[in-house]
Length: 392
Ligand code: PLP
Image (cartoon, rainbow, N blue to C red):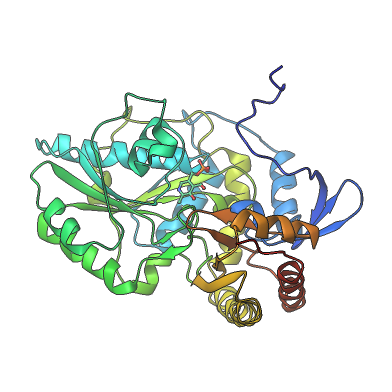
């Protein structure tokens, strides 16, 4: 008999009842160190007092009004994002997938309104942009699209790191945009080198393409800058955001330049819940905390500490791990043993990690993780690796 919850997930037999900072409490009382953070969602950890306050204050005033009216927290959050980024304008969504939908629609409408037939968006092997029809078509992976055809047309997936393939694809007359994650998350924590992002920007400028960055997982302070592309010093035309911006409350956004967004006029897009007062009140507080130089420099310092600890774990267990990679507090352990076995061994040591493609285990702690939490995580990862029996 089919379970009452549609069984689309492989769930671990763990049920958490409360959380505080980087820690989660299981119903049996065990305390787990949360180095998954809801897959980069709980940017400020669990039950951050300022976020609880922002949510409950707003909950006592107003939960929902339609986007037919002005929404003060939404306006405030948009102003903060415009102030701190390349963007001139923001549309709020409820998830990364919805941000992907709008980014695709915006890029297509931009071309349409210029009278151009350039609907094709170049994407990259290993990418992940959500599970909607556009999201799976953009990622182009057989694993996600099989059985769900016909696939939404207008995407061309290119090999990761093949500059020649990219250059010739970008020159095709029907190509209008490039969509890429500055650090691939689901694809196995693969950072795009800064010079490649610079090269992509140049290529886009050369051919008049829109550069769309998916910062759903790598944005909002995760790499030690507010957004990951800032390391390369180049700006996108359109950017998808979600996950960390709501700190655990469902919230996403599409940020864009005036030029890229100009075709999105009244009636061209909408969302019942997008930009609702509760989500935006929380989002404003997250932005206030994360978009602060002192906070971001702490992220960088802690990232260095975690990385150093992980290098030690990898060196001590060469039969389990191969290397550490990633950026900031978005780190991956490339495994020799099966990554799912490593994640399981971590459960046994009461630390949560997340598997990714390319046999990688992801470490995405809250950005508020403490030095003591990092030391404890390194000890638990070391114990997990020590306890593993490696086959073959
Ligand atoms: N884009 C990236 C890079 C992601 O990592 C994800 C989710 O993991 C998405 C898009 C989809 O976001 P959501 O699950 O909020 O719809």
